[in-house]
Length: 87
Image 1: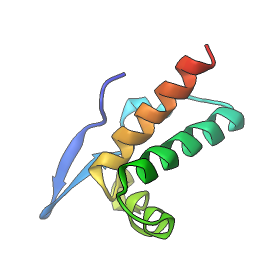
Image 2: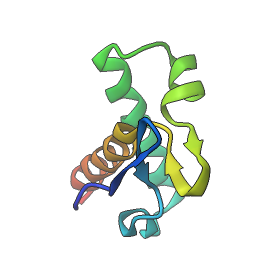
Image 3: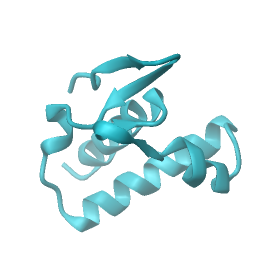
Image 4: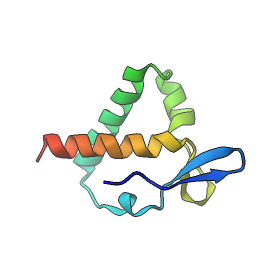
């Protein structure tokens, strides 16, 4: 699985959520497990409180971009981990 395309938007870098990696269809169960792993990884790094996670880290910007370039990559990594553990 390759990393999402990262683009500069003004002074910020954004991850393209319209990248083909985000077109995969998954079950709600796997989506829930991926989000759980995603949040656990965020909290384990000590990046901030859960409220910051929802307000800032996973927010989306216009044109199908993630507000934080690392969030999209981190989500794909979390999804890959749950897929591997349930294969």
